[in-house]
Length: 260
Image 1 (cartoon, rainbow, N blue to C red):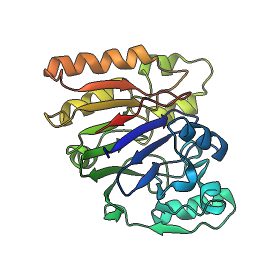
Image 2 (image 1 turned 60 degrees about the vertical axis):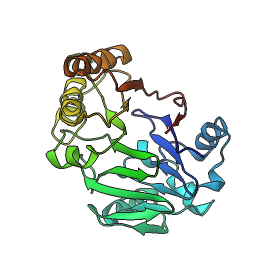
Image 3 (image 1 turned 90 degrees about the vertical axis):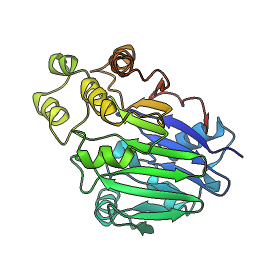
Image 4 (image 1 turned 30 degrees about the vertical axis):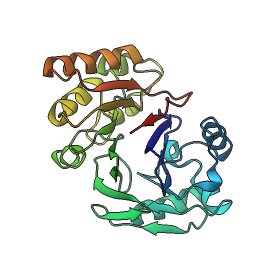
């Protein structure tokens, strides 16, 4: 059976991806309610009861909305670091059975090797992931204010990468519905990557091995899918990286399943 990846949703109101190998079924973040997770998994013929575990990048609600229900109702193991566990339990007012990892460490979940690395975001101890499988490596790099050398080095081996293209800087600055404090947060070095910043990050890591690039965590108010796509496409063309297949993620629906 091929390794399969489905981005179930990505955006400011919920983030979740599903990875399936011969031995392992993982969610990467669970930013939707259990009911919504069940609906989206059912769309690809899967059910949350069969999950091997949930990997959590950080404690913000759009990444963990379904974690408590998965843990308490279905007894699905939750993998996170200590600071994220403490923050989760505080905001959810519950105790979670977590399998803790140290940021920067690697560990095995079935036949998947999970590599973790720190990222700059306004959470307690946020991480990115590189998941190594027999069919290829999958990187998750969202929710970071700037692309550090460490983070880029850690996802350089990815054959598939989910990369944040959160906002267009001018659209964010001009948005009448966002207070200045929220604009400052998004624009800060611990906020979110703009389209241009994501393109600059991609330029530093594009290689012959990178085949699939998902553009993720797009702001509904401060970005447009075609704009994010155009900025990244222009940068990849400049690099001669026509071999990289780009795909926009959506808040409202899953992407088509990718077979590695």
